Picture 1 (cartoon, rainbow, N blue to C red):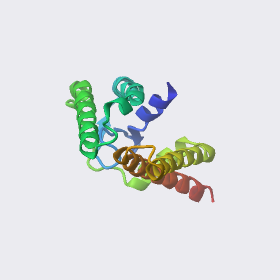
Picture 2 (cartoon, one colour):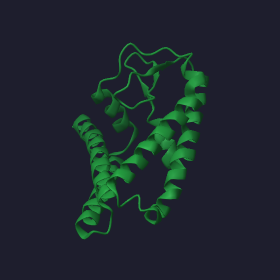
Picture 3 (cartoon, one colour):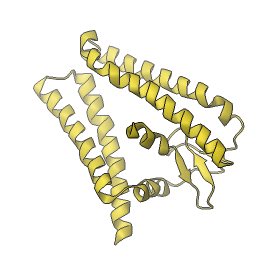
Picture 4 (cartoon, rainbow, N blue to C red):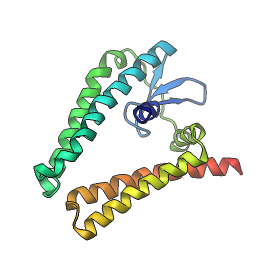
Length: 182
Protein backbone atom coordinates (compact mmCIF):
# COMPACT_ATOMS: atom_id res chain seq x y z
CA UNK A 1 0.00 0.00 0.00
CA UNK A 2 1.41 3.37 -0.99
CA UNK A 3 -0.11 5.01 2.10
CA UNK A 4 2.27 3.18 4.44
CA UNK A 5 5.22 3.75 2.09
CA UNK A 6 4.49 7.49 2.16
CA UNK A 7 4.42 7.45 5.97
CA UNK A 8 7.70 5.50 6.12
CA UNK A 9 9.36 7.94 3.71
CA UNK A 10 8.59 10.82 6.06
CA UNK A 11 11.12 9.39 8.53
CA UNK A 12 13.97 10.13 6.11
CA UNK A 13 15.27 13.62 5.34
CA UNK A 14 18.41 15.24 3.92
CA UNK A 15 20.54 17.61 6.01
CA UNK A 16 21.83 20.86 4.46
CA UNK A 17 25.26 19.21 4.08
CA UNK A 18 23.74 16.34 2.08
CA UNK A 19 23.82 13.73 4.86
CA UNK A 20 20.81 11.42 5.01
CA UNK A 21 18.91 11.50 8.30
CA UNK A 22 16.53 9.08 9.99
CA UNK A 23 13.89 10.56 12.30
CA UNK A 24 12.59 7.99 14.75
CA UNK A 25 10.43 10.46 16.67
CA UNK A 26 9.11 12.96 14.16
CA UNK A 27 10.33 16.48 13.41
CA UNK A 28 10.98 17.32 17.07
CA UNK A 29 13.48 14.52 17.63
CA UNK A 30 17.20 14.58 16.96
CA UNK A 31 17.78 12.34 13.95
CA UNK A 32 20.26 9.57 13.32
CA UNK A 33 22.93 9.90 10.62
CA UNK A 34 22.56 7.23 7.95
CA UNK A 35 26.03 6.14 6.77
CA UNK A 36 25.04 4.44 3.50
CA UNK A 37 22.16 3.52 1.21
CA UNK A 38 22.13 -0.10 2.41
CA UNK A 39 21.43 1.03 5.98
CA UNK A 40 18.76 3.44 4.74
CA UNK A 41 17.00 0.69 2.77
CA UNK A 42 17.14 -1.68 5.74
CA UNK A 43 15.67 0.98 8.07
CA UNK A 44 13.04 1.89 5.48
CA UNK A 45 11.90 -1.74 5.10
CA UNK A 46 11.67 -2.16 8.87
CA UNK A 47 9.72 1.08 9.33
CA UNK A 48 7.42 0.18 6.42
CA UNK A 49 6.63 -3.28 7.77
CA UNK A 50 6.12 -2.03 11.32
CA UNK A 51 3.62 0.53 9.98
CA UNK A 52 1.85 -2.10 7.88
CA UNK A 53 1.52 -4.47 10.81
CA UNK A 54 0.74 -2.02 13.61
CA UNK A 55 -1.36 0.59 11.81
CA UNK A 56 -2.86 -1.98 9.48
CA UNK A 57 -3.99 -3.96 12.51
CA UNK A 58 -5.36 -0.83 14.11
CA UNK A 59 -7.29 0.09 10.96
CA UNK A 60 -8.75 -3.42 10.74
CA UNK A 61 -9.80 -3.19 14.42
CA UNK A 62 -11.60 0.18 14.06
CA UNK A 63 -14.96 -1.27 12.91
CA UNK A 64 -15.04 -3.43 16.04
CA UNK A 65 -14.44 -0.57 18.50
CA UNK A 66 -18.13 0.39 18.83
CA UNK A 67 -18.83 -3.12 20.17
CA UNK A 68 -16.38 -2.59 23.04
CA UNK A 69 -17.85 0.63 24.46
CA UNK A 70 -14.32 2.11 24.42
CA UNK A 71 -15.59 5.02 22.39
CA UNK A 72 -18.18 6.01 24.98
CA UNK A 73 -16.09 6.29 28.14
CA UNK A 74 -13.29 8.86 28.29
CA UNK A 75 -11.12 6.91 30.71
CA UNK A 76 -11.34 3.67 28.70
CA UNK A 77 -10.79 5.42 25.39
CA UNK A 78 -7.70 7.30 26.53
CA UNK A 79 -6.36 4.17 28.29
CA UNK A 80 -6.84 2.36 24.96
CA UNK A 81 -4.95 5.14 23.10
CA UNK A 82 -2.10 5.06 25.63
CA UNK A 83 -1.89 1.26 25.41
CA UNK A 84 -1.90 1.25 21.59
CA UNK A 85 0.72 4.02 21.51
CA UNK A 86 2.92 2.17 24.00
CA UNK A 87 2.67 -1.11 22.06
CA UNK A 88 3.46 0.67 18.79
CA UNK A 89 6.41 2.56 20.30
CA UNK A 90 7.82 -0.55 21.98
CA UNK A 91 7.35 -2.67 18.85
CA UNK A 92 9.09 -0.10 16.69
CA UNK A 93 11.96 0.26 19.17
CA UNK A 94 12.47 -3.51 19.25
CA UNK A 95 12.43 -3.74 15.45
CA UNK A 96 14.87 -0.85 14.97
CA UNK A 97 17.07 -1.33 18.04
CA UNK A 98 19.72 -3.48 16.36
CA UNK A 99 20.28 -0.84 13.66
CA UNK A 100 19.93 2.33 15.73
CA UNK A 101 22.45 1.32 18.38
CA UNK A 102 25.18 1.44 15.70
CA UNK A 103 24.21 4.85 14.28
CA UNK A 104 25.40 8.25 15.42
CA UNK A 105 22.99 11.02 16.25
CA UNK A 106 23.10 14.20 14.21
CA UNK A 107 24.49 17.15 16.17
CA UNK A 108 21.16 18.96 15.79
CA UNK A 109 17.72 18.41 14.34
CA UNK A 110 16.58 20.12 11.16
CA UNK A 111 14.63 23.33 11.70
CA UNK A 112 10.89 22.68 11.34
CA UNK A 113 10.85 24.86 8.24
CA UNK A 114 13.47 22.66 6.54
CA UNK A 115 11.70 19.48 7.66
CA UNK A 116 8.38 20.57 6.15
CA UNK A 117 10.04 22.16 3.11
CA UNK A 118 11.28 18.68 2.16
CA UNK A 119 7.72 17.42 2.53
CA UNK A 120 6.58 20.26 0.26
CA UNK A 121 9.27 19.49 -2.32
CA UNK A 122 8.18 15.86 -2.45
CA UNK A 123 4.53 16.66 -3.30
CA UNK A 124 2.63 18.70 -5.84
CA UNK A 125 0.49 21.63 -4.75
CA UNK A 126 -2.53 19.50 -5.59
CA UNK A 127 -1.39 16.59 -3.38
CA UNK A 128 -0.67 18.94 -0.47
CA UNK A 129 -4.10 20.52 -0.95
CA UNK A 130 -5.72 17.06 -0.85
CA UNK A 131 -3.86 16.40 2.42
CA UNK A 132 -5.25 19.59 3.96
CA UNK A 133 -8.79 18.92 2.70
CA UNK A 134 -8.71 15.28 3.81
CA UNK A 135 -7.66 16.23 7.33
CA UNK A 136 -10.26 18.98 7.51
CA UNK A 137 -12.87 16.45 6.42
CA UNK A 138 -11.96 14.27 9.41
CA UNK A 139 -12.11 17.32 11.68
CA UNK A 140 -15.60 18.06 10.33
CA UNK A 141 -16.70 14.45 10.85
CA UNK A 142 -15.47 14.63 14.45
CA UNK A 143 -17.30 17.90 15.09
CA UNK A 144 -20.51 16.59 13.50
CA UNK A 145 -20.22 13.31 15.39
CA UNK A 146 -19.87 15.26 18.61
CA UNK A 147 -22.74 17.66 17.88
CA UNK A 148 -25.13 14.99 16.60
CA UNK A 149 -24.18 12.46 19.27
CA UNK A 150 -23.31 9.83 16.66
CA UNK A 151 -19.78 9.42 17.95
CA UNK A 152 -18.50 8.93 21.48
CA UNK A 153 -17.26 12.18 22.97
CA UNK A 154 -13.66 10.98 23.58
CA UNK A 155 -13.30 9.64 20.03
CA UNK A 156 -14.77 12.81 18.55
CA UNK A 157 -12.44 15.06 20.56
CA UNK A 158 -9.44 12.93 19.63
CA UNK A 159 -10.44 12.98 15.95
CA UNK A 160 -10.82 16.75 15.94
CA UNK A 161 -7.54 17.37 17.77
CA UNK A 162 -5.41 14.84 15.89
CA UNK A 163 -6.61 15.77 12.42
CA UNK A 164 -6.46 19.51 13.18
CA UNK A 165 -2.74 19.08 13.97
CA UNK A 166 -2.30 17.04 10.77
CA UNK A 167 -4.14 19.75 8.79
CA UNK A 168 -1.76 22.36 10.21
CA UNK A 169 1.26 20.29 9.11
CA UNK A 170 -0.13 19.84 5.57
CA UNK A 171 -1.08 23.53 5.47
CA UNK A 172 2.41 24.60 6.50
CA UNK A 173 3.96 22.41 3.79
CA UNK A 174 1.49 23.86 1.27
CA UNK A 175 2.37 27.39 2.40
CA UNK A 176 6.09 26.66 1.96
CA UNK A 177 5.42 25.20 -1.49
CA UNK A 178 3.43 28.21 -2.69
CA UNK A 179 5.78 30.73 -1.03
CA UNK A 180 8.78 29.17 -2.83
CA UNK A 181 6.88 29.16 -6.13
CA UNK A 182 6.34 32.93 -5.94
